[in-house]
Length: 77
Image (cartoon, one colour):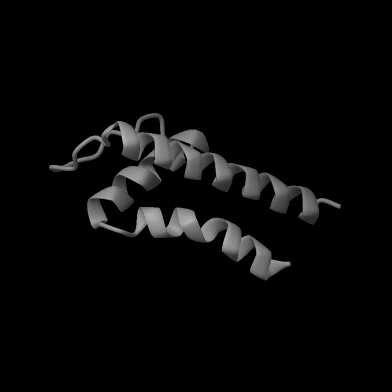
């Protein structure tokens, strides 16, 4: 069960941890999607994602949000 969640989130972890700038931008986008932050603007010289990176980031964010919902539903039963 836990192993299944790990393998489902592993592609998102791999995407986010390929470079520090990608990690910072990705996790800011995730926090916006979780409604924790209001903006994904980053300090410093962190560039915006290109079209392909944004598409992949949005895919992984959706996966993470779905996993979070699944875990919450399992824990509330």
